[in-house]
Image 1 (cartoon, rainbow, N blue to C red):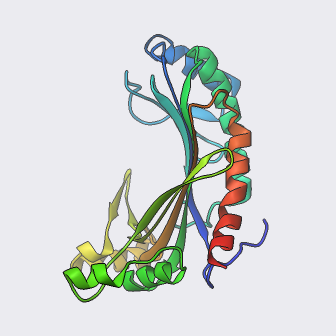
Image 2 (cartoon, rainbow, N blue to C red):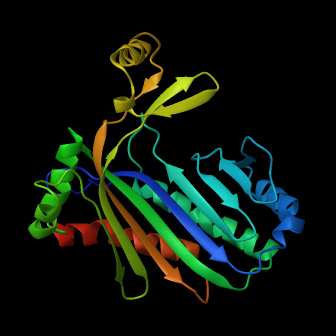
Length: 266
C-alpha cells in the first residue's frame, strides 16, 4: 500500500466511503426485488442478505469478501464500506475493490429495474485525524486555513469560539464537491454478544468507564478508536447524469480527494 500523506503533521485515516446512485421510475423494485437479489447472489456468491427482512422500502445485502454493505430500493442504491474500530484505515485497494463491486451491482440493478433516468451519482469519503481533545480537533481544523470565523461575529455574542464547523459546495470541472470540516467524538464499539452498542465516552459515569476498562482488560471485548478526532468529509457528485459509470466515477473522484486537500492547506 502506498505511503499516506500527512496533512499538517497528522495522518488522514480513511474511515468510510459510500457510493450512491439515485434514479427515477424505479418502482419495478416492488415486483423484481427478489429476482434482483437472486441474480446478484447467483452471479457473485460473496453477497448474502443482511439480517432482517427485505421490505417494500429496502433490500439490504452484505459482502462476505470485504464486509461492504449494499442497499437498493425504488429510489436509489448505495454501496459502502467502513473501517472497523480495531482495524487499519481503509486503503486505496479497498476503494478499488468497492469500485469493481459497484460496476457489477449497477449492471444488475439497472437492468432488473429498467433504469433509464438518473438524478444523482455520488461518491463520499470520511477522513479522520486523531486528536487529544475536542478543543485540539477544533483548533487543528481552524489552523488548516480553509475557513475563518470573523472576530466581530464572536464578539457580538460572546468572548470566544467554543466549537465551529464548515461546509461548502464547490463547482468542479465535471462534478461538484461538498466539503465539510468538523470535530467529532469517536464512538466506542462495545460488544455485547450478538449485539454491538455504540456509546459516547463522555456520556458514561466514572463507574461505568471502569467497567468498560475492565471489560477491555479481561475479555478484550472493547474496541476503541481515538476518543476525539477532526473529520474532513468530502462528497463528489453529479446531478442528472446522462450515463452512469460507477468504477470511473469512484476512482476519478477518490483520486482527487487527498491531492486537493494537500493543495488547499499547503
